[in-house]
Amino acid sequence: MENKLLKELYDCFYVRPELDEQEREVEKCHKALIAALEKPERKLVLRIIDAQDSIREQTSFDSFIAGFELAWRL
Image (tube, rainbow, N blue to C red):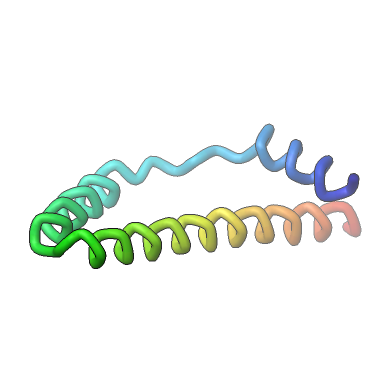
């Protein structure tokens, strides 16, 4: 229950940074890589990207929780 409340707070307060240039670069590199790889390797690249996205999301949420707990204790 506590994590659900913290997740709701995170969703309410989190503002995604604008990373347009970086996202365009990632997309450009991704397309070039996909064009150069065969299907099994493409799937592997997509699995890596999915895992990285998951790590980033969890790290962001963990950082929010740490900041929230610090503020709560102050």
